[in-house]
Length: 124
Image (cartoon, rainbow, N blue to C red; front, side, top):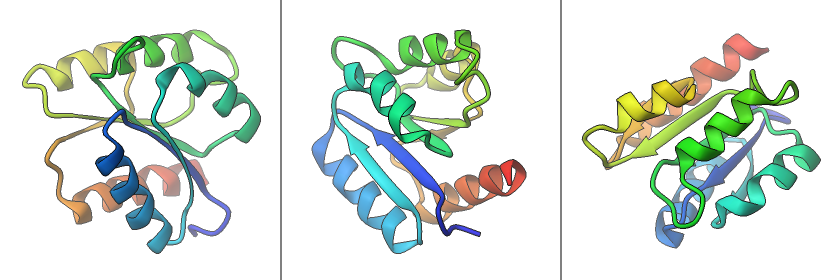
């Protein structure tokens, strides 16, 4: 059930961020969009999301740095995180950092939604 499921989406590309927010909201999720990865820790702490969609390559604090920190904290070590990236070595970097799943950019919307639905179904 998607009702009351909250997803934080973090991507430094405003166009991708807006598109993902629209798609996920249309699919019934509560979405919090964040462009600056430095704001993620406080946002996760205050909003307690059910899942994080995280871009791998962002300025200042990269997705793998964020993920390594989240996995080191008791409160967030089990938070489902799907990493998104166009990088050829993205899957290796993402899984080494502790990603729950990895989806390559450009991504298929149906594949993304089924991945999210599957992870959240297991969490329920």
